[in-house]
Image (cartoon, rainbow, N blue to C red; front, side, top):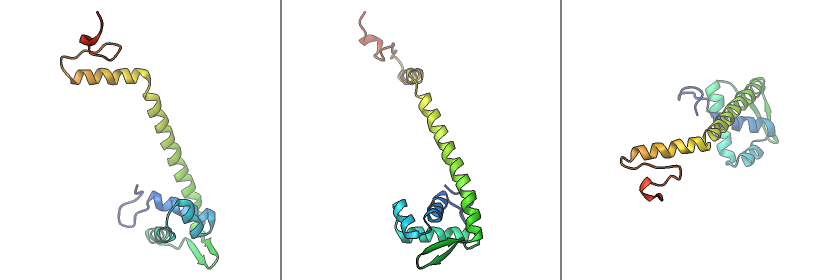
Length: 132
């Protein structure tokens, strides 16, 4: 999911990787937690830095520290990613609620309408298959 256009794009996966690095302060540990290769996370962070035009991390032999821009991005990204996760959860819950028995009944009726000559009763069986 791109948050900006394809040239210099901010991508949700980049933000998630960056947030994990910011939490762990170590790219290797962040990569392990993300189930990604260390190189993949490093590349994502570099792409994010290029897209933003600023350095986000100071890399050292024992880990990383966040720059001022990195600290600001971490705060903002936590909010953005958190809100997006909340929105996704609300939409999934709504979808599950819509799969009620009434919705299932409507789906059966719609299916019957697509097959002319077949009427379905409450059992979902064609009327010719029901006992008289």
